[in-house]
Picture 1 (tube, rainbow, N blue to C red):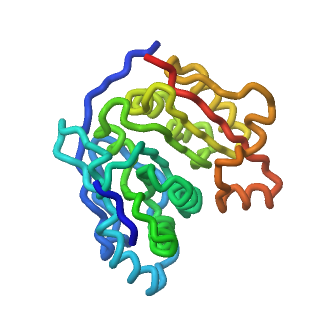
Picture 2: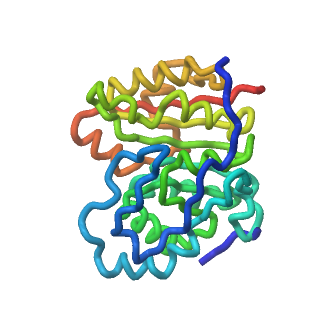
Length: 261
């Protein structure tokens, strides 16, 4: 495998909790509950096929990142064998097709992917092996733990693509795109860094726009309807987007820039 060497008030307290690298033999186990926050959503689906289990056992330990001790910032450039020119983060990468395509297109960028669904994790591991990608690292836990450990202005781009819309009103508090998440992204993203959001849920689209445009740290880059109705050429498609289109749902693609301090 190829390898790299290597105006609300916002809190900047780093690294509130620790996480350990994923053990392939524990992908099917339920992780212990955390006292301070709850992670919603599935961790597993159907049992993994033997081939995927074997591939995960061989490659996942080298791809997984561990968080440092509390109050110690994580240096994301040190995760790679060669220091990348920039660090991009995808939260909830699903099957990993977008992340793998971006990593192959931008070999000088270091990519961190967050996902807890084991089928998606192993699917991406397979893409890493097939494409011989050395610029991807994985965090198979709550992305908020990682965001708490990243140093200020360390990300050049962040993606949250087709997150669970949690359509029932009583579940809206579970939505990933929220003021606390945007607050933390505002800290760890560089001035001018781009935040990309996507959804096929009309209600969540309104929610995303309300929260992101109201945040003082982010500026919406759209200037015409096509800027959010059409996926940009440098934005690879995902399996979920294809399913949405096949079902008659219309995806929206939102781009925001981190304002200068």
